[in-house]
Image (cartoon, rainbow, N blue to C red; front, side, top):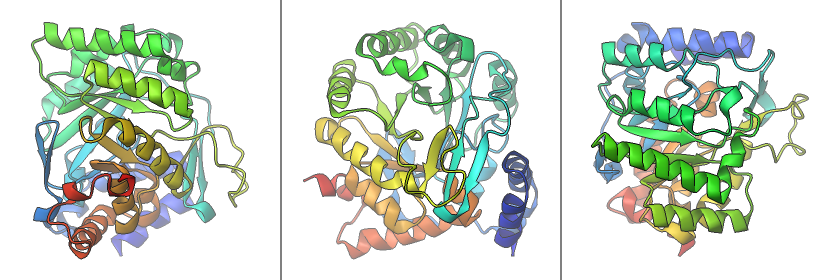
Length: 350
């Protein structure tokens, strides 16, 4: 019943209003009353980034932009969560309308542009209510500073003591020029600067990069060489895509912005495989894009992902989606003869 109410609110109202309602729903006491304690599956437990994950499924950045429900989402079955993207200064983001549901395609197109409360307010929020689980913080630049590294440094200083890991977002298609940070010289400088700052702070916090799916094989090869050389802790593959829209069914398919959900699944898997062929298990991959059931989750693991994230399927499948996926995933691990999910990582790349 609660799932039907949740989905009714999401599908019958403006997408951004629906998102606010979903945040309120997850914040409410109804979550405690109606969702049983998460079942733990021993065959889904892993140690990644020197952190013990009870299961591989995380809530992707973008849903909890302002760090309002990072503790509540653990009650929904998620093994970890990621808040943000957070910028130094609060910003409104791009003009509305900027979020479009493509219901027939189980997809979303957004051109939000990092709307958030800013690092000062959000860092105070997390300090006042420390995370009870694994909570990553996704950081990015304000719109006017998209080609600069200064904003990343400011955010890193604010969150390195509060987060389980820090994600450097260089991949949103909705901040002009942000994806230019994929260029070899820029990404090298950015990684060097963040790692140097981490050393100065005497921190051991894992640093991850969130990468676009819309890059060619040569850029993937160049990036992997840099990631290996710089010993980056991990990567998130992938952000939304500006491709794969022509075959969609919904009339909003040509809206400007990044596409997420089921149509991103195969593209994301192919990009994960290409990175995994270079990196292996030395640099863990968090796979994102189209995870909606145990089968899609398992395919991402076999493509080379060690961990997973979802966002769009929470909208379409409802608040029990994480518990459902973990149950199905645990059964698939057993059915395929593995004792632990880690043994399945990259199985499709051998």
